[in-house]
Image (cartoon, rainbow over all chains, first blue to last red; front, top):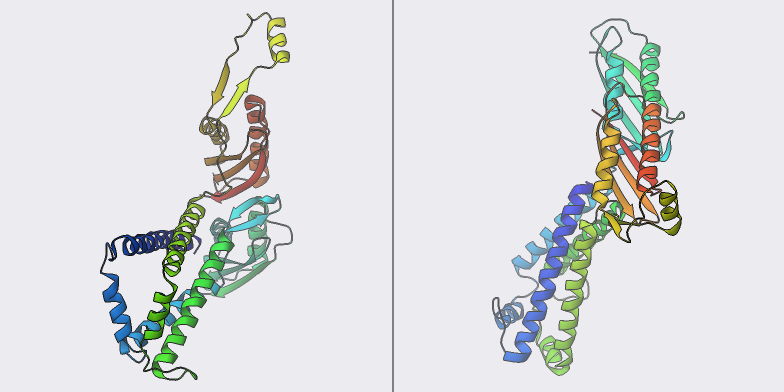
Length: 173
Length: 196
């Protein structure tokens, strides 16, 4: 989302710059030469706006498109996004990539005999996160405490904060 | 920047959604106090524009300049890298004490020159040093701030066997060596570790 926002912000900046320059050029052209330049003459724009009532279907559709685009942007921005980095016990300047933490925890869980596959998901904020590990078995009996122990060791090696809660679930595939 | 961008897009989304629904409601005749049969640009508006000329035109030019400047500001902000401006080249000049020390060590008297070292050279040196550690697969170093107050931003790609406490020691030692060699005392602002 951060990259998308940044790229979109760059586009909006470019659009504002182009729009601002176009308005200045048009206004100067009208005041100096008395006619519009360089795009479609301003008078035809004005005539279109003076002939089009609010009830015109194009106005209705334009409003609807703006509304839908606005709602999509709002949903995308307000949707909770998982942080890219997680805090570590080393303090605020040391961060761990979230995906790495999840992958390492899952790999550690898969090292337990009987665990066919594992999935790890982090939740919370960068400074206060928790991990949930779901280990799947083919029917073998696996003690969740064993999984918890190896994942804890892995998290310790990755410098996870001591208070980072860990939740382990063992399920049959 | 992340939060600012998010706020910017929430504002854009709100403006579009509220503006769009207002247009739909006026167009459908559901907005009280509005007339859907009125044109988008009325004769009164045109007359007022003529009345206000040339000030209206001047106002439009000023508004255009402001919008263009806002666009430039936004682009500059979006293109700015994390951590702010990069460190400028560092210039070393021998002070009187250094000169005396060199002469006392038996070296010939030094000239009055200055030595300029590019920040990218300094970053590359620290990067190489960090990558010598067997746990560190790749390192990316960015120096920001000024020569008097440099700041360090690190991105480390470590091996799955790495122990972060050991990597932390490696970084501390490498930064110490860097400080001794470069005569800079950088503050570690951010270190992002990725396991790969």
